[in-house]
Image (cartoon, rainbow, N blue to C red; front, side, top):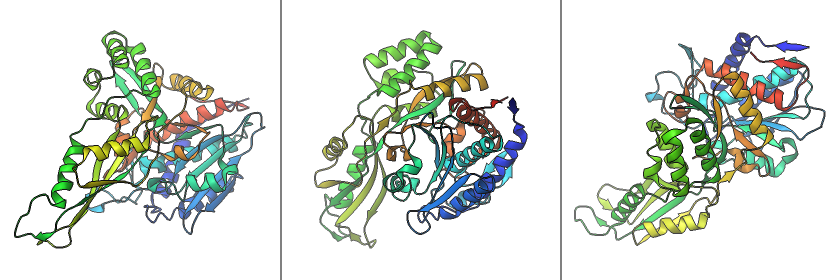
Length: 449
C-alpha cells in the first residue's frame, strides 16, 4: 500500500494553524505561552494524539505530544518554541499579531522564529496519525516556552523536571535549512552545532560632577572607549570541526579555486583567505561570525540627569563563543581589551555544542533533500546564535527547516516585518514529513511527490 499526499490541502491547513499561532501574543517577557500550547494540544487531541500542556510557572506552558512506535529504536523529537521577541509596531507594514496572508506571505512576529516550524512539525504529526503509519520509534513533538530568554521555563526546565517526556536519540530543531547558492550549486545548511552565549556586563566607574564643567576620564568616557575597543577588535579565526566539514563539502562539490581556497584556509585559518570565497554579503557575515568568538555591545545604561556627569555606566555585551572555547578564558580576554577602570562581569557562561554530521539521521536528511531538490547538497552548519539544543545534552539535535525559494527569510527573524512564504511552509512540511517517515521506517510506504 502506498499513500499519496494532496499537498495543496496540507499547505492550506498548515497556513491556517500558523495564522492562529501568530494571533496568540507570546512576546517574552512575559511569554504567556500556555495559550499557544493549549491551542496545539486541542488540535492534536482531536486527532487522537496524546498531548499535554505542562506549565513550569503560571502561564509558561510547554506542549508535549507523542505518537507511539514499535520501540525498535529510541525516539525522534520534533522541537521548536512558541515564545517570540518584542516588536515595534510603528515600524511594521502589517499587524505583527494579525497573521495576515498577503501576496503569498504570512506576516507576523514568530513566522520565522519559530511558529512557522511549529506549524510544519504539527502537520507532520497530524499526517502520520491520519495515515495510520507504523513507526519503528516514538515520534515526540515538543514546543517549548522561554527560548528567547534562555529556556529557564522551557527546555531547560523540562529536561530537569520532565526529562522522560522529551528524551530522544535525535531531534529536529530550528536554526538551519537556508539554501546557499555558490557557483551554480545549491547547498542546504543543516545546523549541527551552535555557539555558546557567554554574555557580559561592563561596569565603568569614574568621578561624577556638574556637566557644565568637563572633567577627564569619566565613567562615560571609559565606557565609550571600551565599546570602541570591542567593535574594532577582530578575534582570531578558528575553524571548528563543523565548519571544516562544511567548507570541505562545498569545496569538493564546486572544485577549482574554491576548493583550493578552502584547503588553504583550513591549513592556515585566516579571514583574508576565507573572504576570497565567492559568497554573497549576508553569507560572508555569517561565515565571519561562525569562525570566531564575538562580543557585541547592545545595551548602555548610565546617568540620571542631563546636567550630571554619571559616576557609573554599564554596557551589556552579547558574547558568543565557539565550541571548545572556555567561557572564563573569554571573559578574561574581554577584560584585557577594555579600558582600565572598567570591570567585566559575566551574566551567563555557556559553551558551544556540536553534533556529529555523519550519523544515520544526517544521512537521511541529505538523501531526502537530494530527491526533493535534485542536485542540491546538505552540509553541516554552525549557527552563530544559540537555541534550545544546548539544554538537551545527549540528544543529537539538527536544526533544519528547509527554505528553498526564499532563503532570505532566515534574515527576517527578530526583524521588523517578519514573514514567511506560503511556498516555504509547503516545502518544509513536505521535506520534514519525508525525512521523518523514512528515518522512522514508516509502514505503509508513503510517496512524497
